[in-house]
Amino acid sequence: MSAELEHRDLSTLKRDAIDNIIFHATPREWLKAGGPWVLDRGAGALLYDADGREYLDALSGGVFAVLVGYGREEIARAMYDQALRLNYTSPYATTSAVTIELARKLAEITPGDLSASFFCNSG
Image 1 (cartoon, one colour):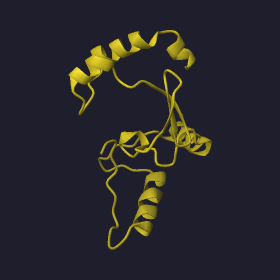
Image 2 (image 1 turned 60 degrees about the vertical axis):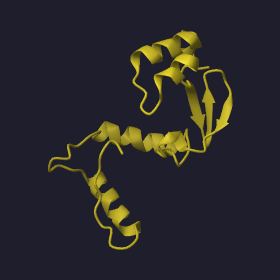
Image 3 (image 1 turned 90 degrees about the horizontal axis):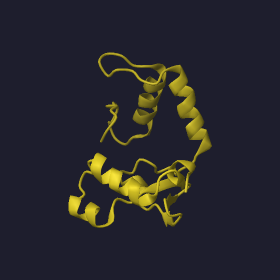
């Protein structure tokens, strides 16, 4: 269990989660019965819960956002470096060189005549 979780017991964390987080697509009755699944960390294709149990992440976080695995230092460094330089550009007629390069690469590797990307922070 991480140092942060050690300061609060798991039952308190679960109760606080139920009281303070809206979990989409999850009936509140389920949450009240057993609480949410509290994850502590990820490494490669594995997830570890707050009790230290290990799981193979077959859904990549449930939204397929972690297909490259957890704990990839080169990805974390690239994210950090970019955040230091420019962490956000508004989608209203602004962009950045790194966004343009990603759009160009996606157009290059996608099939057929797919040639433009719509960048957003959610599905």
